[in-house]
Length: 104
Image (cartoon, rainbow, N blue to C red):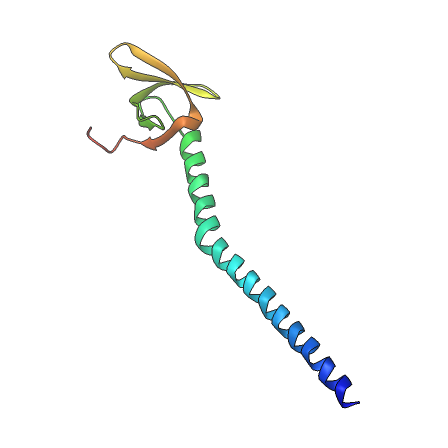
């Protein structure tokens, strides 16, 4: 009878350590979401809001590092005036920064 009690005790201990393992996994996922995923989503929403509010005359920088002024806005792309009469058609998703405040 004593041997049966000793055999049952390790199983209960293993179940407790398994429960603490899952609690730690859940806590780590919560911390990761709080510090990594949530700020990234917020940044993506701000970038989408910026891209939807593009207007003629706004100075912008593309993902490729091209500086220009928006000459015309379409649904999926913008016409970017780069230098003099040089104009480029650029997809809205490649515009990453508003350069209006900079004097460059």
